[in-house]
Length: 227
Image 1 (cartoon, helix red, strand yellow):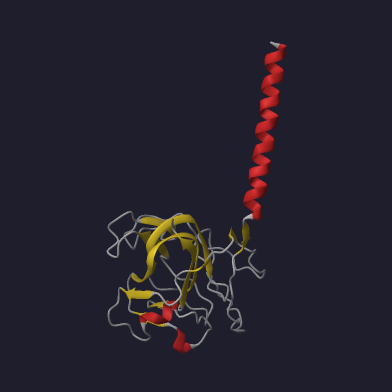
Image 2 (cartoon, rainbow, N blue to C red; image 1 turned 30 degrees about the vertical axis):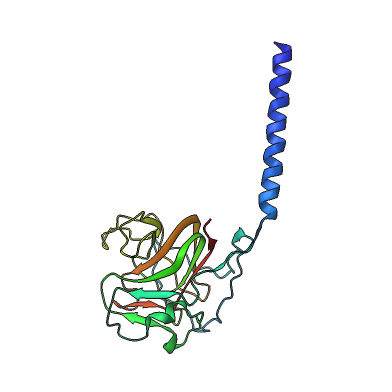
């Protein structure tokens, strides 16, 4: 019995050491996401900001670096974009992936009311670690029913997965989300996609606290080509 206890203890120590080594190796393979943020708009903060348990408080601190595997890049840059609104109010689909995300009027695509989406074709399947979205940081606002989904086909019928959903009452008809609404700032919204593999990315909204219309400035998808 004594020998068995010693053997078990020795095995447990080896397992712990192995876990520590694996964690160290994984940490060595990670690096901060290579994000380039736009300039802040320098506009004042309104006094009547929305509050509640379903809204993340507005932070005055920079976002912590997001760690991802070394070598990931924005695989959405200059990729084809399709809009649910075939006749948007202003802007062209390609603005969503052109790499420009400053708070300028000519850098946004504005679509009509109700739930609308911008869809990106990455060109080939990729392992996606983060999706970063700028809807419209010209003004401080909260966009509603922000839903990010990925799929294997352009019609979103094959292997559809949701990586973010803050539609708390299912008003957009894509199930109740568990994520919270948030304030639009120059940092954009960074979503941890956890390495999900997909070719197509859709970003939905359904108006904001300022307008019933839907706006996208830029979507960045950080990943690597799936093997």
